Amino acid sequence: MPFSGDNKIISVLIVEDSPVVRDLLISILESDPQIRVVGAVESGEAALREVGRLHPDLITMDVILPGMDGLEATRRIMEEFPTPILIVSAVWVSTEVEKTFRALEAGALAVLEKPSVASSEDDVRTRELIRAVKVMSEVKVVRRWSRNTRMEGVISPPDDLDITKVPQQRFDIVAIGASTGGPTVLKTILSGLSENFTLPILIVQHMTQGFIGGFVDWLSRAAHYPVSVAVQGQEICPGHAYVAPDGLQMGINSFGKIALTRGEPDHGLCPSVSHLFRSVLQAYEKNAVGVLLTGMGRDGAYELKVMKDQGMMTIAQNKESSVVFGMPGEAIGMNAASYILPPERIAQMLIKLSSRR
Image (tube, rainbow, N blue to C red; front, side, top):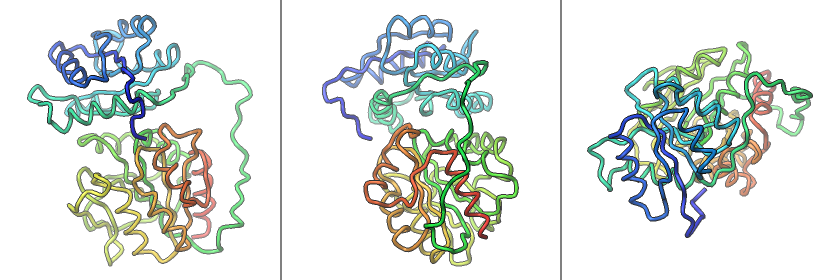
């Protein structure tokens, strides 16, 4: 999903209690002529007041704030003034990492590491922040209702998924790729699988470096089976989920074990979904499931098509439930998906397929 607003000025509200970081964020963002900082506040309470007055296109949110923290501010904003929120967090503070993923669950779109005072205009994190602000400002967010609000008439979807068109074959592994919006979708899928789910799952989630460990801890608390950061040479066990670590391509070696390499970035990404899917194609003749979830760009889309053509089962997340319909949209456009489903239905489908093992 490239930024499409050619001449549009993007208005940003910064929520950050450190004056030094606040000034740094203003300097970085306003170095781009298409971004204008319309407000900068130091607390969640001030953020609530200003978002209703300024109606910014996007909010950058710290999670550790005096008084109302960034997590509660995110919840309240998404209930009262739905606005794209980008969490800008410190990876070295464990409590901040935990709250960061809870803020994503509350409706924030993505997380980036706070830029350092030593950052320059050419710094990778600086460019990443500007790019993220431009792309996330165009995401159409929806109101998130209070946890205390009763959703009358909402029922679980019926268990009516038809897998009769899937060849009668066993499936031995699931490979999942995700980017922007992926963490909460992955949590929904993994929490929807029972403790008796038998297939191993390999996951590539595009994420700012330093957050994978906290992400896996957060996922582990929702899943009914082990979730861990993948380790070189690790045995791939049934009923386990393995997440690619920072800065390494994840695949499967000739002995059927985890292979981590410092290979070239694929689509500019390391780890990349494309690398994982190609490795699965080589290691499993037909007995694998490929899943492509919400995210920017086209990472994994072509390889999902090859997986389908080779006789594997492929699933793409539907547009309605995707934060960014880049990766799954590219795959669907190539006719790469056997099924197009929302997260809850993906979990149901995986349960059905695991029964064939």
